[in-house]
Length: 118
Image 1 (cartoon, rainbow, N blue to C red):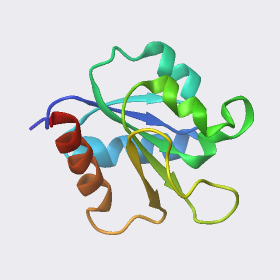
Image 2 (cartoon, rainbow, N blue to C red; image 1 turned 90 degrees about the vertical axis):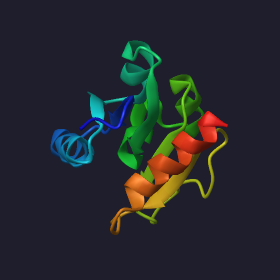
Image 3 (cartoon, rainbow, N blue to C red; image 1 turned 135 degrees about the horizontal axis):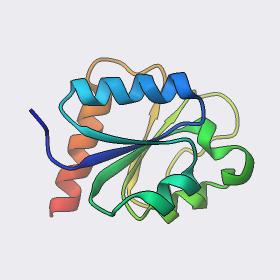
């Protein structure tokens, strides 16, 4: 059963994108996958609940985290906890440290959904 709405998945590596896509679909979400923030920002229809963005998508041309604002929706940023990643986002969203534990991702999506509904 679908949870309602779409989750954008942004990850440059194909295997990782498929892994996130599978987990979200198994959780009942519709998913739209993209290799870059630019691609997701230009293609999604605006009806997404949030974007799940892997830290790898913030390297290269999409390196600056302010690129996340182009998405126009809340963001769940997945980081490894190593390197130069932000400790907070400028816009609405949450940062989760990989590896994810339990229902951490689904709990984050639900919190964002509730915040947007109020």
